[in-house]
Length: 189
Image 1 (cartoon, one colour):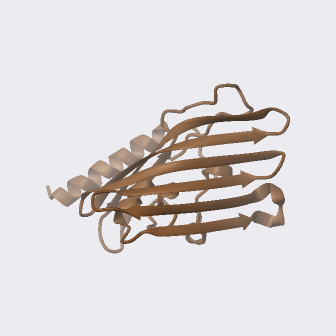
Image 2 (tube, rainbow, N blue to C red):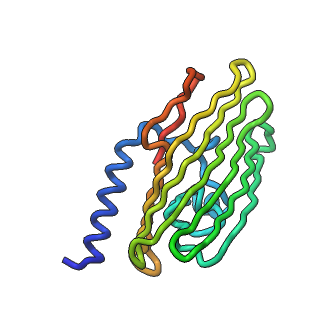
Image 3 (spheres, rainbow, N blue to C red):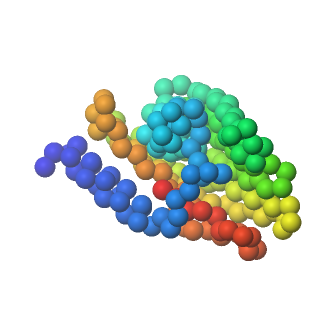
């Protein structure tokens, strides 16, 4: 069996396994993809290499050619409650690419923030892994605020020029806040 095919099969099995660990999938708030390119393609972002790679899939950081900085903001349906703002950037070195981001969602009565540092590394010329640590804060005016550190993991495989596979898992350990807010920190893939 070809080494490239073995990598593809292993990555697909890993993606399926991580997807089965996911308890809930959400498409809003701190769990949504970042960047206009992600929303143009229907909210997909795990195999896109751009300024928001560190937040959408840290493994894609390894395929960056240069340093990058991105600013993103949106207000869905002209509602303050749906306001999103993000600043993301990364630094490419010889061995690893490091990224950092600040993401804010919400308004005065309810808002969430993600502050993260991520890293991506090439393992072969077409396969990379990424990981990160993020501090997630939820503020609810009637209940107060609570934060917790969560892990992020990503894998990316460039099968050909026109086909790539990626997976991103946010909070794979299912970390919860110390005190009970209305919802736990989401785990999504």
